Length: 422
Image (cartoon, rainbow, N blue to C red; front, side):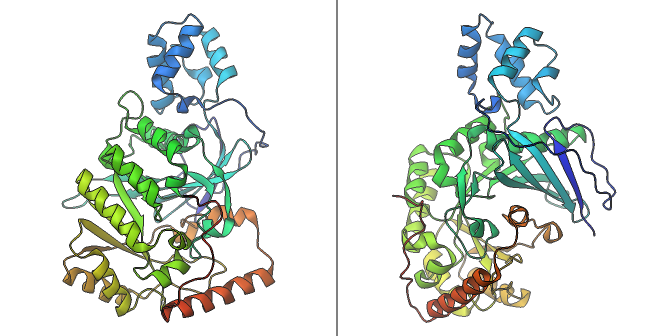
């Protein structure tokens, strides 16, 4: 099915056309450096204090919150219950939306919607909305995958975001405004968001303070009001971040991007492993599950001939046996400039059977939205342009050599990625 591409202004409103062949372009907004913070990133108590400094009653905070989080107001100027003067003050002090521009691509019979967001400074981030219709034994779900950073420092070679490198951490408002943008579209159609996963661009635990503030806003009944158990935070293995989450005792789901259970191979697939080896990552996740009672979700991108062998399955069984865990096996999405392809489905099914035989709950996930580059970082990579051919050739040759050495049990001699601290 062909995709449609829509560029939506910050003040977007109305229902999207359901004709997949239509391409609609709005006039682009030139990015500017914005000093005003995002209104959605302001905690309720801070908003009450801001209002009090201007002689406004505390109940105005609830009216502002309704405008920010209700999903129907597209700008502060349209927040009718507020006095005109207060609306003007809010517009001068805050941005109602930190997403300056959004490009949408929809595919899978409108079940998958990929959004490329341009922020006020021109940085690009992505989010993906996936619709799961109701079936026997399961209700209808709308799951949104959001970004926590522009780019990523971890550098996983099968991920398009990793190839882009690290840009910057997102502000709290820039994280939650991805949710608000999608909510406006869903509300216009009488739908609601049911699940949020921090599995977009970036490593959430390397921007943990802002991620925790975003989760607080999304979970707060006075703001977005989504139950904590409907929120998932993913990490590639930042052990200190996992330990910090455990101490806080949150009820949201922790997902670990595992991808390999053997250190030599995981050094290549998840360069963070050179700083925090896989046994340390799983030990931290195990403690998290014990402290919170919440099952850990392990994500494994299946790459043909690289991490899908019987030896890899056996290593994963030994690593996870007896844990309160669930493994998701995901065929690799096509990513430019890598020498690898997705594992064939029969190979993935054999891998899954070995895990299940050891008592490890395992699900095979089918990819969504390949026509619109729904894998993390693919749309931003399109906008970044094609890297020089010699650089691509060197990268492919390096990955072939490193993965071959890893299969022989050789550990990487490269340091952990720049930007990954203690």
